[in-house]
Image 1 (cartoon, rainbow, N blue to C red):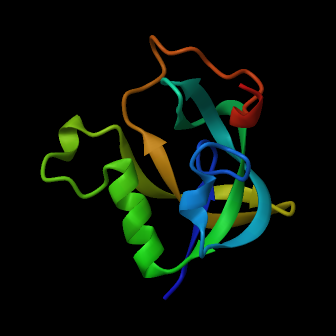
Image 2: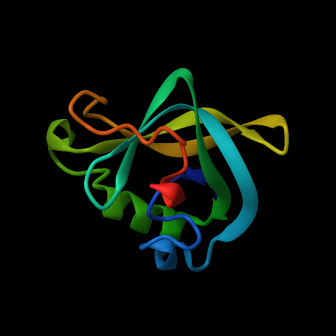
Length: 123
């Protein structure tokens, strides 16, 4: 069974790891309420707040979702030391709310530069 996922950083079209989305169906651009921070060559998204983060919605099958989970460190024996968790959240897609999976950054925003535009491809 396929799932919907919102990607906002290195997995987006034109970004460094977009090749990992091979086999996914691109549905279109979307946005979510949150704060985007620069961790290193990749970003982190903390949900909520008054800022908008831009991204894309994809439909992915279970095998690709497992690969993305592994890439993001989901399902490790000790997730307390992980960087992300995968959560369901509401994005705005074509002007309508849509529930999707998102990899949320677990380490907060303090100490990381904020991407003010909310668009990782501009960072």
